[in-house]
Image 1 (cartoon, rainbow over the protein chains, first blue to last red):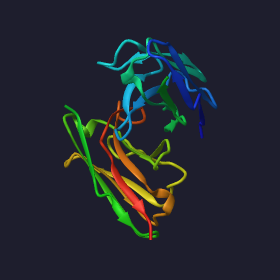
Image 2: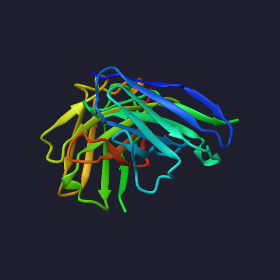
Image 3: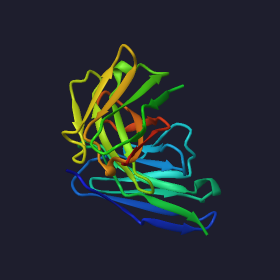
Amino acid sequence: DIQVTQSPSTLSASIGDSVTITCRASQYIGYWLAWYQQKPGKAPKILIYQASSLQTEVPSRFSGSGSGTEFSLTIDSLQPDDLATYYCLQYNSLLTFGGGTKVQIK
Amino acid sequence: EVQLVESGGGLVQPGRSLRLSCVASGFAFKNYGMHWVRQAPGKGLEWVSGISWDSGNKAYGDSVKGRFTISRDNTESSLYLQMNSLRDEDTAVYYCAKDYGDWNYGLDYWGQGTPVTVSS
């Protein structure tokens, strides 16, 4: 089974900062990784698929990069609405989620 | 507009069974894989099970293998999860999610979830 390690588990940043979340897969997964945003009490929402493709209607301040085993999600110019928990998902071999990163506003 | 509406959750005793349902609308259900994902209280997301567009492929997470069964009815645009031998650790919100493709292409749309509580 493929394991996915996500870091950090918690992140505090100020409005306007650029923040980066990383995911590392335990084996090669190509570009088969997605990123999700989940707000409290809500279902997850897709942000990025295939490592770097922005889902329709997602703000352009969100971007994804990486391939193979190392991936990152960057939020440029952090906004109050970005307060949420973010998850990566590998789908190269079945599905495995990362542990999540809670983004807090300083 | 894609909509996924789960139902069937509730309070159940350990060892008993429960069947979850998910009704889909707004897309050609018969062409897409579907999945169940759960989230225990205060915890992260865990993939539970997935099924291909034609039911030819089914897969399960290790924690539910042998106890849960996924199925679908393309004529009814419905997805199901039969949960047997339930344990305390199965307590979670269960989400139905649509695959980007016919099988294992990631998840795009999610339902709002149905809560399951396993407790005596």
